[in-house]
Length: 278
Image (cartoon, rainbow, N blue to C red; front, side):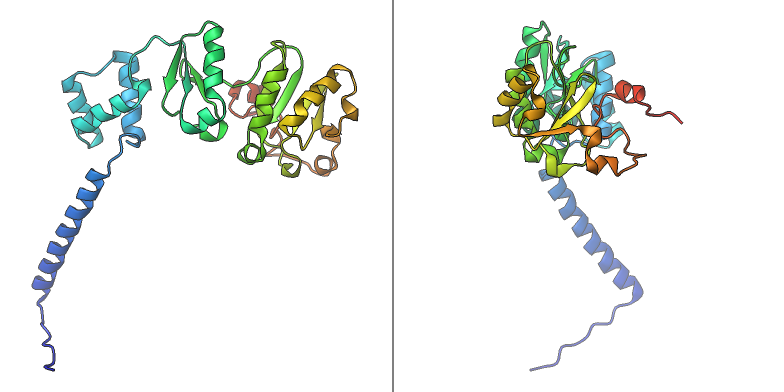
């Protein structure tokens, strides 16, 4: 076997070869990026520009589409693709919009849309609100609407933390909605961190929040019956006043002081509990 001859390159030849390799690699990457481009993931900059454009000026003209493409470093075809892909970028006369993304549908967004329509709202559809961990998402005038019953009667609180949902809190909420009348209220909260007790329902009884858990959807009917009869403390899932639980009594919370108390997406409600003070 003849020994291989080594080729000695000058620095200029080496740089030239490297430059050609990089150009070839760049071409492959650009081809892959173009062929795999997804209008459902156009990036925040383009989406934000289109939302503001359509909200304030209506559908962009062909010339404006080209301008937006130039601003965002993409093509007019891609801009038009994004407008066609996202239902919220199309003009409508809805008073409220409900997300119908996969996660929100799994958590009952279709039932929410039906309820809002019966209440007199003109319901529009969102493809995805980006609130998958806390859906179903509802937006009114671009503001997030906390989901749940909002009556002034019986007050209940259920975590919408992702772990709570994994353990069954959404099924519990659906059962509650079937059992409660229009005067009741369900507030979706963050978690108190007591995951061994999730799913957990907190109920305001005579001004004190009582905890029940772990509770399954099959337990909801008997719990509501016990509450109505004044015998909630005797229910098998009864834990007593939430603040008296040993896990919480042994803690002094600062940064997480409001965790599990109110809806974390309700900014005004959080301010009423002391957020942003001090």
